[in-house]
Image 1 (cartoon, rainbow, N blue to C red):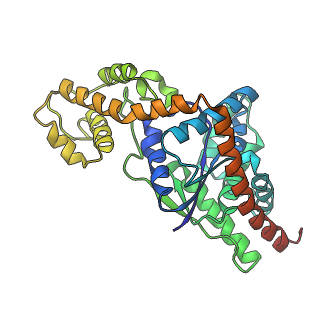
Image 2 (image 1 turned 180 degrees about the horizontal axis):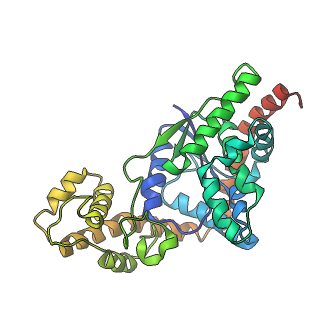
Image 3 (image 1 turned 90 degrees about the vertical axis):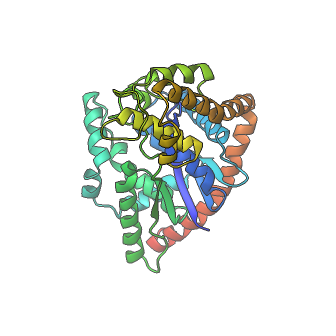
Amino acid sequence: MMRIVSGIQPSGELHIGNYLGALRQFTALQDEHECFFFLADLHALTELPAPETLRDRVVATAIDYLAVGLDPQKATLFLQSDVPAHAELMWLLATLTPVGDLERMTQYKEKARDAKKRRLVNAGLLTYPILMAADILLYRAEAVPVGEDQLQHLELARRIAHRFNDRFPPPLFPEPNALMQKKGARIMSLADPRKKMSKSHGPETYIGIFDSPDSIRKKIQKAVTDSGTTVSYDPRRKPALANLLTLYALFAEEELRESAQRFSHSGYAIFKQALTELLIQKLSPFRERRQTLAQSPPHIRAVLERGAERALAVSQETLREARTRMGIA
């Protein structure tokens, strides 16, 4: 059994790319490992959301994750800002982190470039990876579920852990490994298979986890396909169809070649109909569970409070040891 930590950005509506790339992995990990999952409201502040928007998104995201199967009896779910040790450990680790390491982060360069257009470049964007390192090291995690876009940040967390352990022996922090989800890591847009599925490209380009059956039917019907009429898996010649076949295989929990063979003598319309019915079958329980959870805000608050109590107990022990070694206990 490993200790696993992952942060959840309260960024609004979830889509099936989020589910296949991360959420489904979380629900599997909680059955076999000690998992700490937190709602990253401190990280969200780097984008300067309106206070009410952030508060609403935090609650909504908690409901979303519980609806898709996160079990508070198996995993610890909590709000990042409810555990002050995240911010304090970040400061301790910041004193061990060269500015050059932060300026080389690809995501910082991209976000700073976009934010600069709006004159919103803030220090939080630069120091974001140190907070991420603190999030992980605070619980002495052995592994972290990450996508390709977070690998560079995780590598920095490993270097910070190594630097701390080397300067203040004996080793306190494990150097966490990446848990990469290969299947489902890159689900593409329904409108353009060259682009990764994202809410920013418009509602017709993605399937929301909690979409109604009618919405799912309309979106799959409008999803682009490639020239020809034969269903086959060919990412180079038929990238749009390959994306839809990938969705079918992942939700049917079968190999791609099985899905391609299943529809090899069917036209696009029959395949799209089958994909539509499969998505409705798999996603409807999530939507129904979410509707029930949304009617009980006190239950959601209680889940987060219990999670924070557990996280506080673990984090305080680590922080106390880090403070002692650095001479500020």
